[in-house]
Image (tube, rainbow, N blue to C red; front, side, top):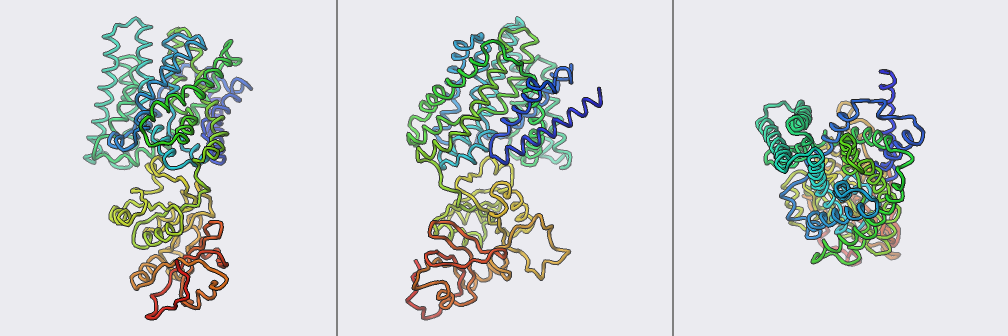
Length: 604
């Protein structure tokens, strides 16, 4: 049995990895492939039987995994950011979310015949989208910035708030089934809130005073989360999920606590937990489904997709700056994800144990909604965006890592050439100057978990690593290879080839193609700018071609980029020599002008 259990768990880890990898390759939410893998392993083939495999350990394992998932999602909610997210998002995550909950609950009660308590729970879980399903879809969808920001912020905020709604409704159901009074229900809620808040304060207290070494901080926070969950459940039954949700929200909003590394660790852990958990949960789906559940699930999905979502978006966006086309696309896109699947399965296990009528319908209905929204919206959202004329063009924009004088000069030149440019850096002085010069900026490391949620890559398809930190340039290049592809990532040298000896060189797999030519390093480029060199944009013609440009400005000129007539950006690098043609616009670093420059330059 031990060998069988170990082999099965290892197999699920590998299958989970393959599902995550496939999702990355095709740019779809991983939850879709994880659920399909579980269904194939469980009800279809019968290879995996979670109840038999884990026995009494199933409920504790699922409970602890869901606790970590809810905590990690709650950490991303920052109250100070809410005023700036826009009227439409505030509407979607407040009265829009409540409207979604009530409408879905009514539909579940009327169409699936479930009791009102289960219907309300379905409505709460069905109102949650979340960044883990929105982010991959936005990469494929590529809508305009207002749509992308609205959908991304809705997912970030509704993830913990929707979980909180669901937990409160679940607490009410359990309290009612166990014959508890209103006082007991309030005590349960109060216990969860207090334990979560106290746990967050204690963790923040120790972290702010550096009483825990850095290498143990992730361990300490994980232990504290699981302890708070278990302790809250021990004191008042079923209050643990509320405790960890409150703990995450509180800890994420306490000033002076740096959570980036902890959030990174929790995201990695959550990826593993989600991969195994969803395979287990999908494998427990009854097959065939209870009578009428498949039809009811499809009908509820249709109502959620075609009626509830468009209606709530119309309601929430009244008075916003969104056009009707943008509202139409937002009203179509609302994939359900991790919170809906994991929490529904956990609640179903507990409600089954309490013999709550209709509890067996919760998971099939939620999973049908998840699969339906992910599949339909992934297949149709991009064509719909194009038809509505709210889709971004092909991602020709440029993300620049760095904000010093070199990065700002290159960013302004590319912006003048018509490309969307975003400068990302965690050095505030450079970002401040870039903003003063009218450049779009992101304050933070572009390879951080914070950037995954908050850096708007709409229309961006290339990375230029231009910072003065060689190692961080390389890490950013490795990170964005996955996003843009190996051929769309470049770096500006910090060392010349002669300086880059075996002792100083980085491993080849960390390196991207160097920009421009062998003689140009970041330091050299900065010196040239200080000496009066300037970046020049010129459109070549039959009467003023590239050889004539070089003849006028000198062979020392450094060709940096070229823009084809159809708008495609070409990057000069040591791996790819550019040969500009008539009709192209060249972006060139040229020496200081002569005292009496020629008048034949058609520079624009």
